[in-house]
Length: 300
Length: 292
Image (cartoon, rainbow over all chains, first blue to last red; front, side, top):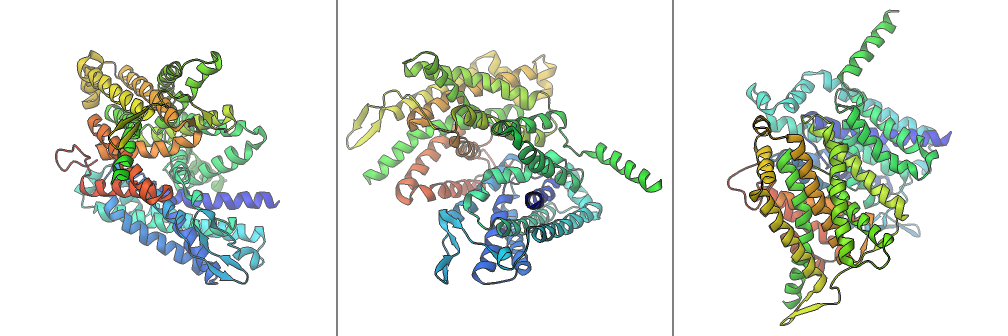
């Protein structure tokens, strides 16, 4: 059973990663910096609980705030450029963060072992959960409670005036600007929210794996972050969740019986999915149909 | 001082491969306004296919392997076009971005699967030759890379500006609808662009394999990043820009590898990119304040 709880933890954390890219994608920007914010949240929260003995919730909050601050700071200069230029600028930022942690040492002695991040060796022994006697099930509940809160907030954003503004910028910048929307403010705010969500996700990731290193935040992770919302579709936050379940649950774990061939199918299935459903797995039509079914059930 | 010059010289020579990869990205972007994230992976894949020549004919010369990589790169380029672009609506840039990322992972995995993840030795030409110019020396295989790279760029420029296909390609890149109204088959031109960039990529992959001495699937992601950086520094869609930027990045990278070590090297390349994004967002040869 622990295996399924572990899988649920992975799906929860990756959902947060995907959602952080989702809100930025709503404004039509492709950001490959999410892995960088994820790394900042992971290292910050891990260092606070391990080196300074903080409890988990304030540590995660600090990770989120740091992620948001850095995202806001990156957003201003990076969002001056658009399209492919932004993809590459954010990719360079994400790689820069990874290389920073690759060269980052901050260790203090605790008892007879040294703890803390150590460059290429990574950051071992982030043992907040085991030390405080949390079971896998409790950790999973904790992660999913946070995922539920973040999803609810983003879902509410989506249905509010703010969500309409985000989508307006994503659909057509010139039209949005001509009705008086401040493009920079909208884009930077979306980036900031994305940074906070990625920071929380990173903090959770550091604590359930107990060991992070710079390769845990490489380009592949950044690509996955944008892959979830794109594969799932930008019609709703549930698209991202569906894509994470599809990728982590089905492609990674469900196909494990195929052995080596699983990795081959992985890329091929993504190519196939984009050919068959270019607007994502859960596009507006599926969402409409689901809503009708849901309403029908309620009426019956 | 001599070390410094030597490091820059070696880097610029190797930078020719970055230039070739950068041209591939920039050409596809120029024609279709799309990024082909699978390009570097397809290039390395083409270079691997070149090794099949050695499997088929024991002791085949190195140039035969290069030729095989060249041809295989073209085939792979066409396959990437079919799988990732042909059936996806043009108005959907995110979908093609994702499908090419899927293709990148697929090609990488096929390579890992068939070689069991072991790096493969790659045949080199002129690797025992050492040219001397005063105190400086030039490795023969790097000189070959540089020479072939420059020749490829010349052929490509001639193709683009002296042939009917080149005219059609440039027309499609400027105004796809108008080009279609003039009777140009847009899909065919797009496919041709992918085949041409694929041929270049296969050759670039083989040259990289020859100069490093071995091919490994670990090469694809760094090459993708370097190629994209070169594309941006050179200016999107600019071929001369990509050439100069490739050489520049190569020299810059080797310089910092010499003095700051291999772990910090890429940090400085990123800083170079940021400097360009802030001060010259349109690339080296930008005319005005062009963004996007």
